[in-house]
Image (cartoon, rainbow, N blue to C red):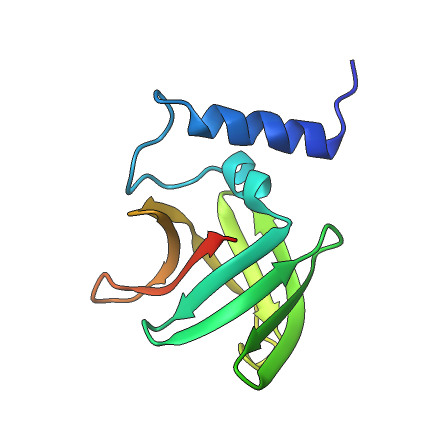
Length: 122
């Protein structure tokens, strides 16, 4: 039996919403990350820069923060979300585990244990 990508993502999303699924502060698996993407997100970078991110089914991303905008790509590598923006990341890929935390998804944890980015679907 074949299941298309959208149906598989919906199944994973439903499974991760069940009461017995991962709780707050749990790392997401590749399937759980894939269930979030593509989509539209509110993001906060370094606790102060707010952005709107649109991630497409083709791996392309667009972001805007005030009058600034950028474009790039997203992918899932193992259990990590990888993003690259032309300007915002200097065209260098950034891969990170994603952790569910207090209604947000967080990643890019610095040496002090603080998330550099947090995002949630809109």
